[in-house]
Image 1 (cartoon, rainbow, N blue to C red):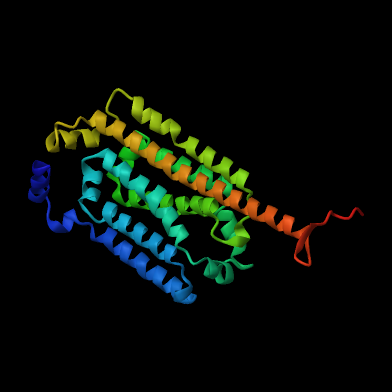
Image 2 (image 1 turned 90 degrees about the vertical axis):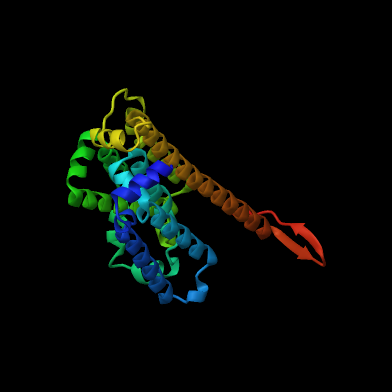
Length: 289
């Protein structure tokens, strides 16, 4: 670890080690959410939304504003995949959960924009586009090409962020009017989403040769003890485990929420058949029409 740190400090300046663009993006998101929260009463914003935003921005600074970003770009595929997994499967759902739902429902989700939102967040369209685009990004030939074109790679990653946000918007459904999918269909949606990244993860995991020569050549000079094939396999494991963990948590949340609503509904039905006569509870049967 000391050799790794010494090599970084010797080869790069502090400006290169700490990505000011990633830190700046986090700061902009913070002020954007503060502005959104001010559109409604700030005191009405639940403390959980503030906690979600703090966690999301903290993780974003960690993976995009620290030397992890530099190591992921030039030396370790596993760190780059960890960045992607952290952003797509942790930061994005936390940002969606942090949105002021009252503002979305009253000012943004109206008749003029509703059709646009329904199109970009169509359940099956967003499912195929996000997972297909992410799988294509990790295909070695595509990845090598994008890495040689930083501007195109940045645009590609930006498109992934937008598609990922649309997918999590479907799963979380922060706007009450948008909640048109029943829990079973949402559970099926999550299950199918978990299968989409399986082929590319298995491909990276079982490959017996190095598929990313750029990382292999840099690792040999930087950390020869860590073979590039192990780095490739670790990247596949990180991608699949983080995806499955995130989707499993979302699935459990949907099941528990659905179960609670069903119990509440059963309680309301029972109350409709109860009458109180001088302190005595009498059960009334439904009248047959």
